[in-house]
Length: 365
Ligand code: KG4
Ligand code: ZN
Image (cartoon, rainbow, N blue to C red; front, side, top):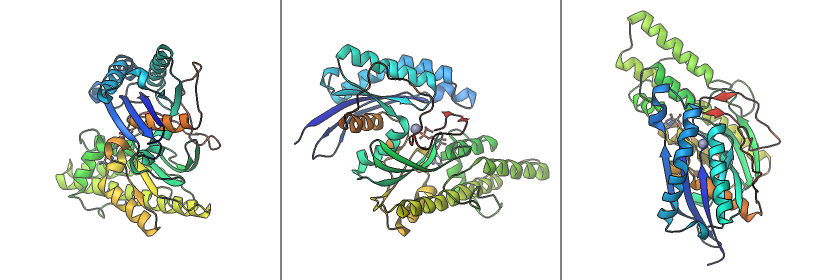
């Protein structure tokens, strides 16, 4: 076995406090030695979204407990680490700051190097951790906070092909559930309802398909759903079980169509760049949706690209992806000192900066 690197990763950019230990020995597959996630769902449930101040306080309280649990789970001590990796953005700034300060304290105390990680790079590099995917590959990040197509050419080399100009798809699923009185998180509830629904009953828009490019939009879809719901309520005084299922099925079908067509276009751009890609990968909570996953897999197959979808626990926010992205940066020589800044916005593709507003889960990038 070749030289081994062992990294402790910290994640606190949204509503999950997480710590993990990842090891990679050259010539072998990477190993996740521990992966601790303390979700804050209950703390925010009453507010219909993540409350930044509550999130930041909870991160500050839980980070060291998560670190302790991650080290214990790995059967290692801080001094067995080669470096500490931490999400330095983008995200809710109070939470990111809590993570960065904790990581700085640990690094200073143990005399370890510190590596700041872009949260989106964590998602984008996960297929290498889980499936050993080689560069370059095409990635679709779809979650409650993000939606973008990215060409991943290297651990620090990303080209964004398109992004949402308003809501992220997960946000749209969550708002749909709210409008129909279904439980949060909305994605799984809407998916279950949709199974019994008629996806052809309402003519919902397929936003931005009439325009070239890979940018996406989901807020018009949510408005269309609201109008259809209000029309039904005005007509009949309420929604039947079948109405709710049909609304969910039509909404989901529209999201599936938009993601599939935009993925086709992103793959065409990827190919036009002359890249002999190794795969089309997805990550983010929305990638858990079976209808979405199946259509994206079909699109990848049509294009002759292997489809890679990491296990759900590594698609959603976690610290193993941060430890892994930190490990990849560390190997490239990256070292961040005590001046490492917490950044609310931090586009993955610096030549293609963020231009959109904040979402329910913080700033988009
Ligand atoms: O990646 P994630 O755990 O957190 C961030 O947004 O960072 O994604 C959560 C989002 C939520 O909006 C949730 O409704 C959505 O992923 N989601 C789904 C499904 N499961 C989770 N959306 C559609 N279908 C699902 N089965
Ligand atoms: Zn995320």
